[in-house]
Length: 130
Image 1 (cartoon, rainbow, N blue to C red):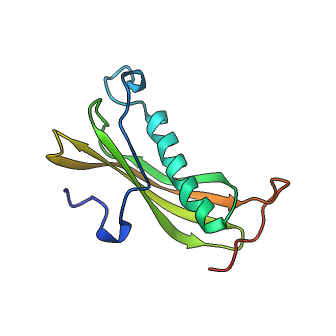
Image 2 (image 1 turned 180 degrees about the horizontal axis):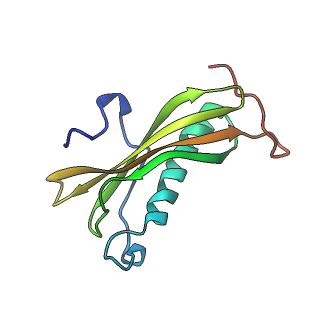
């Protein structure tokens, strides 16, 4: 694994997926919007666990595309809580591509997603105690 791969603190991936041929952009790489949606799904899973209920993505900060995702890559999305507020939380997300029959792991993107806990009226609500 490259030096930029997630540390052991990240544990297991939240989501693991293989992109389909329909996810390729005109450059022959995986469309950036596809990987962004996978990151949002994984971050939402972590946020909903912490909030113990529904959440909404309200911001994406400092996201960068480091390397392209290729068609035969297996994508692992890692996510963990980085900051916690009264109603919101920052979830740090990193995406690792496994390629070459598992011989190489490359960090392809990462970012900080902010989620807000929602009540039954889809309004912000306080997070449960940590």
